[in-house]
Length: 129
Image (tube, rainbow, N blue to C red; front, side):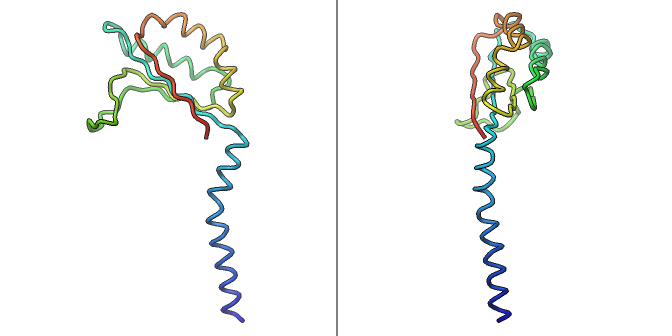
């Protein structure tokens, strides 16, 4: 009888552990959290440090949860790694709606107005988590 109870307890524990990732994914989808990544290729004579300071204002927009800005990491050169950009930003939003509000936020629009002539290419990658 004891071994049967132990088996049932272990089976329940294993079942809960296995279903946990699925439950986390379902709760994240309900919340609709989003990551917005922006990569900038600056014009040849642009000062990267100044651009980093200018772009840092994006993290102050009210709907931005977390904000990271930086330059390419000095990782090993491989076919799948792109080190050609100069600045990248990663912004976290609690929802797709928050990201939509960010797009029309006056700070974001002012950043674009002041700095769009400083880059020759920009790429955005958005994904839900």
